[in-house]
Image (cartoon, rainbow, N blue to C red):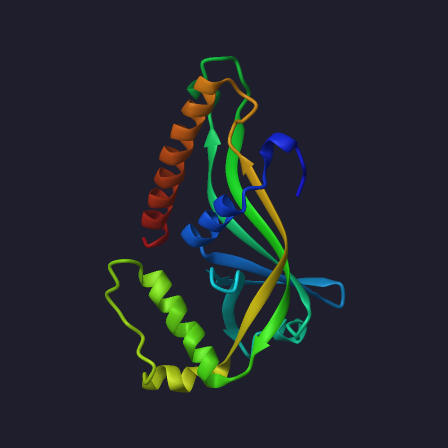
Length: 198
């Protein structure tokens, strides 16, 4: 990513927090010089310190996902337009955002029982603390679905965080931009969701 140092985030714990809060990642690989991108939930497994996911076996991107293949995964956190009106100093309009880019190598999980365990773990994570649904190991639908998915792990070889949060501004303006990001990111999301369902 473009490297202004004050926008680079090197704290892996913060990057993991982005992954856990915004787990819908963009899986990027290349086939014959053409980038392929699939949007899938991708979970960070703390025990093995790897990303874990699964993809439809009929997805054309599967051609690039062999053991040892290199991929990039992008996680997008909140983002929003920041008006100069929020600052106490004279500024230009800008856009603040949080992204995490990870590079790593693929390890396929070919054992159906192990693949089911990844589906169970992902469901448990995504359901959260107030888990209302439990994916049981003997779930018949999962038994059928496991034949159509490819589970895999990504061994992370490179972490890169891009947190553009008005770090080059004075403290008060940074705080104001943070509040604007929180407010506008949620407002834009809520308004968009209402509009898209009309």
